[in-house]
Image (cartoon, rainbow, N blue to C red):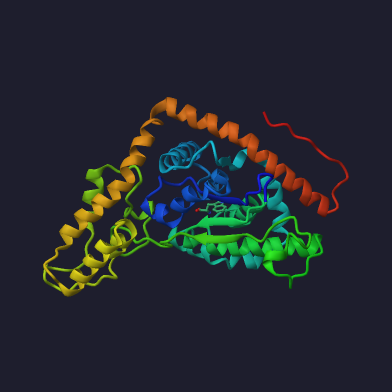
Amino acid sequence: MTTQGKARILTGDTPTSRLHIGHWVGSLENRVQLQENYDCYFLLANMHAFTTRAEKAAEIRRDTIEIVKDWLAAGIDPNRSTLVLQTEVPAIAELSWFFAMLLPFNRVMRNPTLKTEIELKDLGDKYSFGFPLYAVGQCADILAFRAELVPVGEDQVAHIEMCREVARKFAWNYCGVSPDAEDADYEKLGSIFPIPKALVGRVGRLVGVDGKNKMSKSLGNAIFLSDTPKEIKKKLGQLYTGRQTMDEPGDTDNALFQYVRAFIKDEARIKELEDRYRRGDNIGDGHIKVEVAEAIEGLLGPMRERRAQFEGPSGDDMVVNILSEHAKRANVVAEETLYLAKEKMHMQLARRRLSFE
Ligand code: TRP
C-alpha cells in the first residue's frame, strides 16, 4: 500500500511495435480502468528491447516514444499514473542482479514464455546472454515498485509466476518468512514485497486477421490502435472464415466471432448475430465484418483524435518531458525498495543518496 492507501500496480510493454487491438483487450483496457483505484506504474521496457535488437538503438528510441503516444491516446492519464522509463531507474538494474542469484539457471531457461519467444523469433542458439536475463529483470521491474497486481496478456503469466517465486525466495532468505506462508500474509509476516498477482484481460489471446495466429505486428496480422477506418475495413475484409454463402450454418468459434464478442458492446446484438450465424439465417460474413469494423472504429476513433495532439516533433518533446518528470517519481519508490532490500540483505554498511533532477 502507498501513503494514499492505494495498492500499486506495475505493468509495461517492450517497445518493439506499435500497439494493436490485441494489446487493448489483453491488458491496456484493464490498465486504463485500474487507474481509478490503484497507484499505477506503467513501464517502458526499453532495456529489454536491447536484448534482441542491440544494434537498433535509434529504432528502439523511436518505438519507445510511439508506445507512449499509444498509451496516452488509449487513455493512460499522466496526471494520475506514473510512466517509468526503465533505463532511468538504476534500482531496477541493481535488483536484477540480486534476484538473478535467487533463481536456478535452469529454472530461468525452462520459462515457457522465453522458450516460445526463442522459437517464434527464430533466435536459435544465437541469442545474447542478456536475452534470458530479461525475465529476471522483469521480476525486478515489478518488485522495485512492490506491486500487488500486474495486468498482462496471457503470454506474460509465466513471467509473473517466476516473479512470485523470487518474492517468496527473498522473503525466506532475508525476511524470515516461511515458504509455507499464504501469499496474502507475506507483508504482515515481514516480507518487504507483496506476492504479486497477474491479472489477464477479458481476451487473453486475440487472434489476428489471418484468422489463425495470435495478433502480432511481426506476423502482419494486426489492427493497430492508430489505423484509419479504411485500414480497419480492409484488414477485416481479408479475414477468411471459409464460409461461402449467407445461408450456410457458420461456426461461432471462428476468428470473426471472437471479434464480434470482443468489440461489439451490445450483448443482445451479439446473441442475435451468433444465433443467426449458427442457423445460417440470411447473414453474410461481409455484413458482420462491417458491424465489427464500426465497433472497432468506435473504440479507435477517440484514440486517434487524442493521438493527434502528440504528432510531430513537438509531440515527441511532450513525451520526453513527461518521461523525465515521471522518472523522478519512479525513482523515489524504487530507491526506497532497493534500500529496504539491502537492509534485509545486511548491506547497511553505508547509505548512498542519489539525487534525481
Ligand atoms: N515482457 C513484457 C512484454 O513484452 C513487458 C514487461 C517488461 C513487463 N517488464 C514488465 C510486463 C513488468 C509486466 C510487468 O510484454
